[in-house]
Image 1 (tube, rainbow, N blue to C red):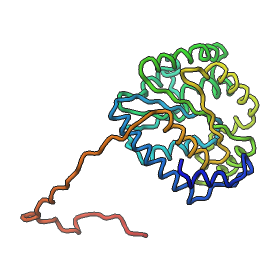
Image 2: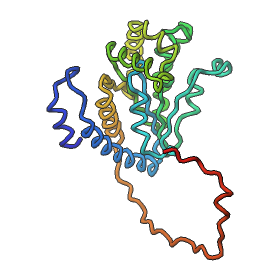
Image 3: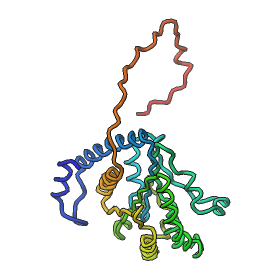
Length: 276
């Protein structure tokens, strides 16, 4: 972390009493971390690494925000986001992990799962979307599935975004009243709000079974979105040792001569009206 950023943290009160980071400090540090992400991306491609990063947590905990900041400066052909919808009738009959396996990275790729196979570990049992037998089988098989991925050469990193009751309520209210955010509030989110304690119990059981040595859970304190983004990105960069991959020198050629080329009349083209 930069000296400016560490000083900004030290000057603020701890925990929930800390005020929001100043935008200038946040943006400066985010820009530095995103430059490092570009270096990490080039290393992953150069070394043929296979990286899976899982983002889980309560609704409105800020998973999407950190994923957006990770990917916004990266090449989508190397770093891609997987956010699967409700399984089809056919997919419901498949092995639980099957449709997620199809999204795993090839060499030189990093895949970010915006929710993952852990739907079966929290959302589905709490909301009654799976049977007790299916839930118990998931808890038994998930650790072995992940160990198998790791043995195959995949680097697996798991984040759980933790948000307080009060902060989740504030974010839900913001989504209700802001037309730009209303789409984020699904019926499951609303129903899940009334099952806060059930979700907490399910998360505790999940951690007891799947917080394994080979793929531990990393909990992100997400009450402050800006801090959560910076902390998560900085931690992610620490998980994969990487080095600079030198860029090839590029010399732009001279533009081709336009002699002999006649443009068609500009009136033959349909332009977007300039409203701004």
